[in-house]
Image (tube, rainbow, N blue to C red; front, side, top):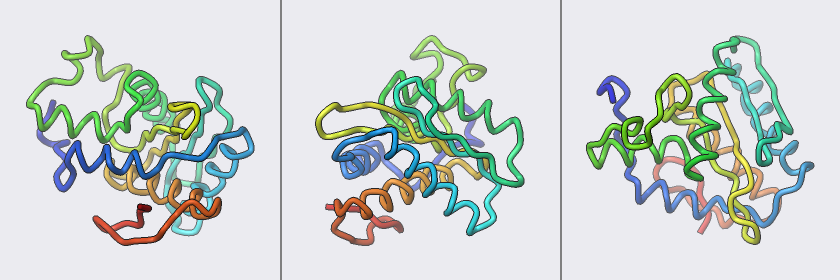
Length: 176
């Protein structure tokens, strides 16, 4: 893995704790649309050149490409989705974990970067009752920003559902 894509400021443990805090009470098709619309709104308000996709299993329930995004973003989304569907962890977790362990993620999993991307922006959608059920995908920003926008989106969704106790930690809002 190229050092030019090394991520600092995160640990696998921190990212697993974050994943645990972002567990959803449940997830319906309407919820996936709301999650997508939250991401769209955040992106549009900030003029971000992103593409957003939400999947329930393999079913794409929401997709939006904001101005400035390109067809290349779909390739990134598809490659990130394959990682999250395979590992049920965020793409950033997979990158940071491989980086910390000093392994080539692609060799370890017998995969290529042509089909899988361990760049931030793919987050698992996990529910309390059913576990892993889908994926939130964001592409168009630097990988850490893609990831943090996804965290912000899921945090907002949970807040709207009354699921959050607000606190600032690691530069973004999380629940405890």
